[in-house]
Image 1: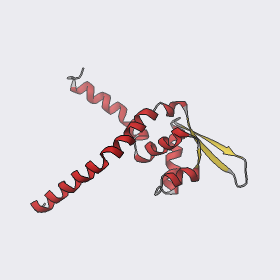
Image 2: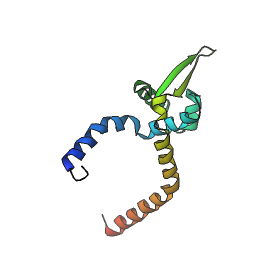
Image 3: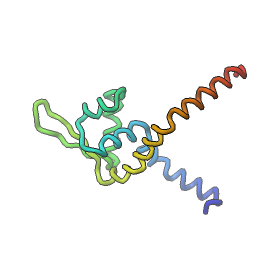
Image 4: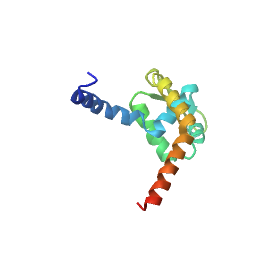
Length: 126
């Protein structure tokens, strides 16, 4: 199967809509935050600064719609909303923790690669 390129491409294309829902930067970070404990909207926003109110709202709605996050209204004054990861969302914990760890470990290496690339492009006159 590994050498069956058309079948492999069909499989990749069938997973694209799902990956678009869960693999964008805010979804990964939101789910990583919620893996440790439920959190209120403003607590998530503070942890993910500089996310905008609108971007966080849209991401949380998308995650809730896809069954990865649950939303609970807390009757208080003012009314508060708490978000928690669902069992389905929890299945993404290991891959997301690994991805965040990888980003921490190799982020500086990628920054150096970008800098070297940009310097090379600038010296080539491109």
